[in-house]
Amino acid sequence: MNGWLIFLILLSAYIAVVAVLGAKGILRKKGISLALGFIMMIRTKRGKAAVDRIARPKLFWEWYSNIGLAVCFAGMIAMFCLVMWNIKISLQIPVEAAPTPSMILALPGINPFIPVGFGILGLVIALVVHEGGHGILTRVAGVNLKSMGLLYAIVPIGAFVEPDEEELKKAPRLKRMRVFAAGPTANIAVALVCMAVFSAGFMGTLEPAASGLPVSYVVADSPAHENGVLPGSIITAIDDFEIGGIADFIERMNGTYAGQTISLKFFVKGEGTFEYPVTLADKYFHTNNTADAGKGFLGVGMGIPFYGGIVGHDTLLSVLEKPLSNLDYLRVYITLPLSRLSPMPAAYQAFYEAPGNDDAFWFGANCMYWVFWINLMVGLTNVLPAVPLDGGHMFRDALLAIGRRISPKSDEKKVGRIVGPIVTVFSLAVLVGILMSLIGPRIGSLF
Image 1 (spheres, one colour):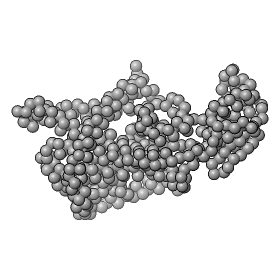
Image 2 (image 1 turned 90 degrees about the vertical axis):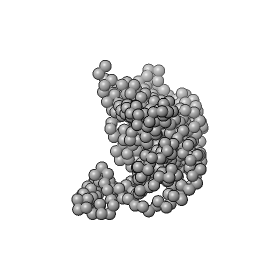
Image 3 (image 1 turned 45 degrees about the vertical axis):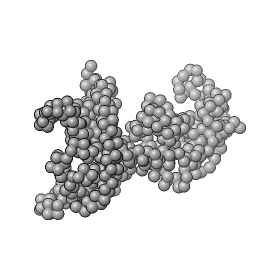
Image 4 (image 1 turned 30 degrees about the vertical axis):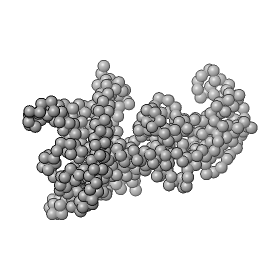
């Protein structure tokens, strides 16, 4: 039976059971409420003592949260500028290249770029870390935690904490801002740790599987394809000419002609080295370039389309191993899922020897990357200056503090009447910026 069909059956059965239990009042008696109609919020007071113990070194958490505030406000400015820039760029995107609603939502199983298993793992960790951060800083601020608990939909999908809202409103503004910043800060901290482990601990330990020319793709019906050369192979020699890389390959192929039979030697990880006689095709019939007429054509590619260009395995490994080397590397590193690299294609994995078991290595590497990516997205999204996001509450408190400093004689309510509309305008601007990803290309096509 199809996996998605099984999932839909389980989900339907779960929703039906929850609806019946809710209608009979059984959930309410157990202290369970519903979010979105079917996600159970299972509250408990257990764990509060553990949160209190973690929150005891208040000086450490205050320094941590002060750094977090600076990071969150820097992220807020950067993200708001990015969202506003998106309004302009969206008008220039062709309609056929416009993102769909599923691409906007960073939800595993809905977003086509996010693998379900790794995505769920990353999302659960992100939610637990986010809410845990809020819970710890709530206690550091001296605000009572009413409850904490799990979000449950077939399986646990996250966690939440419920501070005493009245106490939080009465808390000093700086302490309140620390509480709001704690969630995104925790996500960003986890993202940085996972980035370091992935890049240094995983990518930094890879060794080439063989010396030669890695084959990223093979042209259909080409001599290479007909002779069993597959993506992931490494060409080691042509005739008696050893191939050490792309320069050697180009030099050798420039000396060949259509119809020539060469001895092709290539390595396949886990299977060994193969050698076959291969008759080259005419390059002209594959490129339609008259300058290529009569030249030998094998039909292998050394890279994959990436951001309008071609990226080879060595460049991609450099990006994954040293993402902070330059801004271009960091941009590519963060946007790998948008290029459907998660984070390294299976064909590229065959070019390297990993320490230990290959399957375990790449499973661990993928876990680290996706926990990094989901946490980064959750953290940066939550610092946007839009209520009800954490960034919206931080932004409002920051404006209130600025307003009181400019006009110390004005009371909180008077300043609040000015700040409220400003926060609303920014919230609407963020909403418009996000929606323009969907409607901008269609508006732009009209002009």
